[in-house]
Every structure is written in structure tokens, then in C-alpha cells.
Amino acid sequence: MNNCVFCKIAQKEINAYIISESENFLSFLDIHPHAPGHTLVIPKFHFQNFKELSEELGIEFIKIVKETINLISQALKTNDFTLGINEGPLAGQAVLHLHLHILPRFKNDKGGSIHSVVFNQPQQSLEEIYEKIKNASES
Ligand code: 5GP
Ligand code: ZN
Image (tube, rainbow, N blue to C red; front, side, top):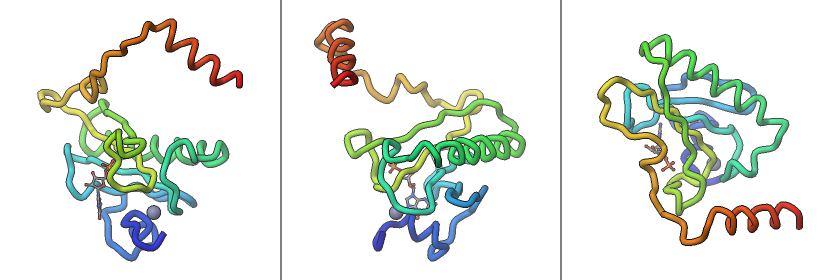
């Protein structure tokens, strides 16, 4: 896509510190790191969301995520990570090209768990919400 910064990185029009590369994916250091080794994994072609990722590409995606984590783990001496996708603007997605954040975690790094991202307590019961989801999957 014309004005997409991640397409430009994938096409090597913009430099990035590339950690790992496969046929259809690339991982590179985030330009504004929230942790040492903060890395993004992207597809080399443009689509916005995780839900658009095909099952065929899913295996290659998981492979490069694991490879990237292994490299960072060895280099920065940590086995702990937070992995996350800001899926859509309401979730904080600023760059509308799929990317997974890999955030290495360290002792006393002052970060929280995934639970600290949002605390929007549901007004409906678990049962009501469960029924909605079940009905959606059957229709
Ligand atoms: P989002 O909020 O969309 O999940 O995160 C986008 C991420 O992309 C941000 O963490 C931001 O620092 C990173 N980013 C934006 N532009 C560039 C760039 O040109 N190069 C690199 N390496 N990272 C970028
Ligand atoms: Zn793009």
C-alpha cells in the first residue's frame, strides 16, 4: 500500500534493524522501544488485521515469531515476553498493517500483565455473553 510505513520497510525503502526474515514475513526492532529488544513481526504484503491472516500463512507466522523470540532470548538473556497485537484503532492500532509486538520482559521492568491493558467490567453476565457468542458461531 502506497503510504504504509510497514510496506515501505518490507520493500526495503525504509531502513529497519531486521532481526529475522522469511518468504512472507519480517521482524525488526520497534523505532520507539518500550523495552530493550521490543520487536515487531509483519507480513511483507499489506493487510490490516490478524483476522485476515490465512491459515496457510499462520504456520509461517508462528515460525518467525518463535525464531525471533529465540534470538532475543539468547541475546538479551530473558525467557519472559509479552506478546500482543493492537487489533484495530479501539485497541490502539496506529499503523494499519498487521504487526505483532514482542516485548521482552525483565525483573523489575515496571510493566504489567495483559490484564493491565483494559478493565472494562461487563454489564452482562458471563452466561449472557457466552450465549451471544455461541449463537454467532452457529448462524
Ligand atoms: P501500534 O500502536 O500500531 O500497535 O504500533 C505501531 C508501532 O510501530 C509503534 O510501536 C511504533 O513505534 C512503530 N513504528 C512506527 N513507525 C515505525 C518505523 O518507521 N520504523 C520502526 N522500526 N517502527 C515504527
Ligand atoms: Zn502496509
